[in-house]
Image 1 (spheres, protein in one colour):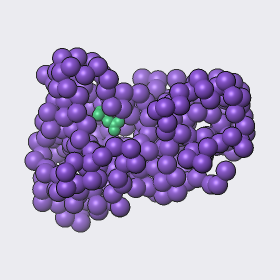
Image 2 (image 1 turned 180 degrees about the vertical axis):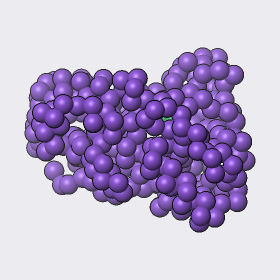
Image 3 (image 1 turned 90 degrees about the vertical axis):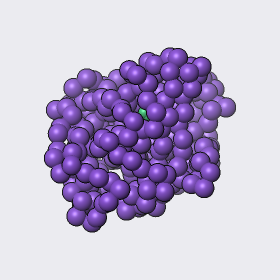
Length: 274
Ligand code: SIN
């Protein structure tokens, strides 16, 4: 396996792999690269949904998305389609996957079926280096904080803002996670945030109090030196580690079609009861 780093802080292309014929040694090498680079990708693969699931299952239980149906016969495989006429793109804001659940995804595998002639890249941000880039005083202040995370398309953030939310108002479906998470395998601390429709506020603070801090952290964490960008080709498989990477789909290919298959691997419970 040849490892070609994609940027100074994260991402690597893995060459010389045929994922239709993986074995334990190959998966162990790939896992080490995933830990080292945050996301890895392999080009020129030919993976059916069954092969994608079989491969992903080696990293843990597959996660069925609570709000998005899977494809026929494979409830764990979500087909992300942006048609020529669509304006909105799935995942078009910086986020980490399923942060609104008690057991957010440990990892995500995304496989390109159809891609536009140009654009439609995915951007990744390294939440370890974003954390390391904060001052010692800021790191100390963040250490005990937790965030309230909610997935609710019907309840826009403005409604939360107006209510000056306090903890007793946290809805039952909210997931409360540490703002700084040690990576479960490496122990290295990472910021843990998503966009403002998911990470609503800091536990114990009103929205007005926590918003400036979360907005600062969101902006800080996407500084160019913490990011890298993947250009897709049909047959590219990417695998990212949601425990240290955030990502977003770049919506810059209006009039073209993009089709991806996505599978997520369940992580561990990092919440505590509110
Ligand atoms: C996602 O957010 O999981 C999808 C990213 C993409 O389609 O590039």
